[in-house]
Image 1: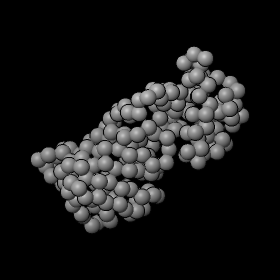
Image 2: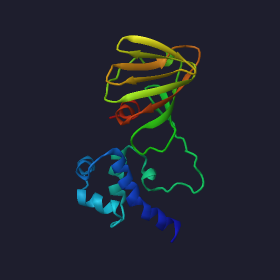
Image 3: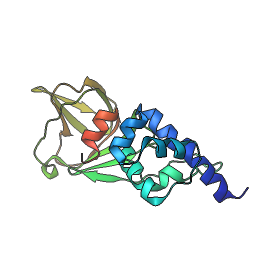
Image 4: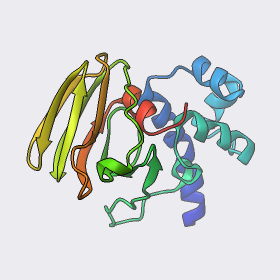
Length: 190
């Protein structure tokens, strides 16, 4: 079997893995993508080969790059190929392959004067972060806490919250772990 055939054979289980990791039913996914539940089921079982027209809405529904739906990992190379994204003046560097559930990111906060005005968020779930470098401020429902390198915070995200650099002379860096809801608020435009 050629490498291409092996990759094509693995697409169905990968698609099923994304859906089950997110806890989405066939009917829910069909509603999000415009594909029928039957088509999705046949794709996941490998009964039909996926087309680009089918993979694009699936990639959007799972919020992953198209190549992540079909690409097999390089054999023997466990490294994560980091693709930073920028949003709201921050840089998010994914620290793992996005498969649903929780996702870890390195977050780089520019100096305070370069940040947009605070925008508070609330959503179901929990958030955790560890300060790698610099000082960040966490504002939770009106209470401001400064955390320095080596300190961590965890909180219920149903409380209004905002995180930003506390200093104006250097960037700050954290490792943050978001659940699905928090990731959607912080990383993607939905």
